[in-house]
Image (cartoon, rainbow, N blue to C red):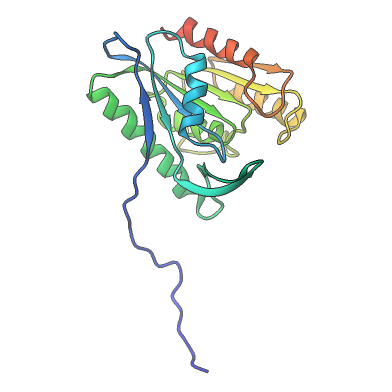
Length: 228
């Protein structure tokens, strides 16, 4: 049997396409407040666009982003393709890709006169909550508001040297019967976010890991009251 000298973790660079959908109100001219909707694990941009349309006030632009990591997920009708934002293999590279995606969407829509760069709100569900918090704390001058639903927070929230103080108005929403996070864990997340973000509020609902109509009403009021 031959003997080998093995080099590991060699790399090359490839270009991938990152996809998003854009919805603009009819008979409105920019620049408009921009709601960037970011789906959870296993979902897709069409799902989060539907959710964004249910909460967005009049006069907002919506950009719904699709995560780069596709996989098959089981559904009652068979397997379907879903998408995710993070992997266990080199997660820092996944975070950097999410950052680059948001930076290019914000700058591109601002250059086109569609988005008002002083009114950019991140709306994330589940897995997207933590990556959105990471972006907002890494680029605090670019994010005006944060809506996070049923998601976690960065594990290094207090210790990451890249994080800066964020003035973003923040709404954190979670359920009392979530399948993935206990009430104790949500209470911990709530406390840590409250200590880190000065313009922060939260609310717990009678819900599982989902976005309910009551939650949608809360988000709609938050967006209408602070960003129109």
